[in-house]
Length: 361
Image: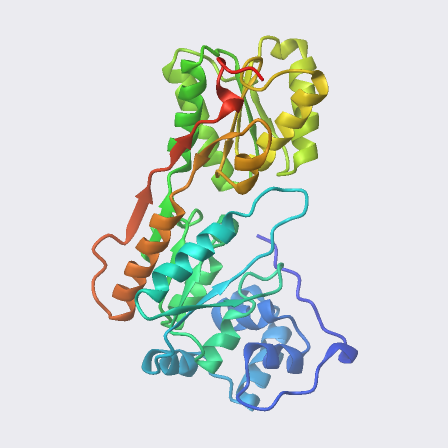
């Protein structure tokens, strides 16, 4: 494994040192390195060049930076706040899933006397923002949601003995012992595919994300299993693409025009964004969703509910996820054994006109 690139910050980028106790950001600025490099110096020193490690350690000692002391303060002072790092939705997608989840989480937390504190961070650094809250003891615990990119936050927070739970299983570490709640994506895609099979479809294509997406692979496995259970071969019917409406529109045209894929009459999609792209392509070809080509999305977003003629979609039980996360977090905060530390919840299928063969406008 090659060493990660260590970004040396030019002196012109170094900010004046803020008042108050030093933070991870303070150390990074003073040493002229990235925050990830400081985190590596604390947790994975073997990843750094000796001269870089020595420079960062000198600054840590000189400033008196102590993440473990901050974690102890976090445990002894109750703010009744739960920190959650919020990522903006990507342009060109219909994914506003976090809005529904956040509303449910805020409501569930408030019933226990807690409130949710949103914070942001550098999108290239999954740990950015956590250390500042640990140092300031602003929150009692964290809910981690971006496990699709791996879970470096789990190791970071565990090493500091900071309470947390995750929405999403630890894909990179299936044996990880921290508490998590997730939704069974494979079960959702199986239900979507079986629904289309019941509608009489036999050549059902899959539009999904790149192979690197663990969540996408999980959902794809449900589509494959449902076809195999029905005695059908999914080989060649799966398409990988980015989560973008226009990319899905073009991929749909390709599938319907490709002689090797002749006979495809339905699509199961890894997201509603991709499902909306399929609907756009069908409109351009003068085909009726449902009657001519069946379409099922995933997440039951607002777009699935308002787009014409209504997109059938797999709905994640986000309200139940939020309640389970809050109850689990209360056990973690109270140092009680968590009765069910790893919970997998089942999604449901919301059927609309896009998948019903008996519907015409």
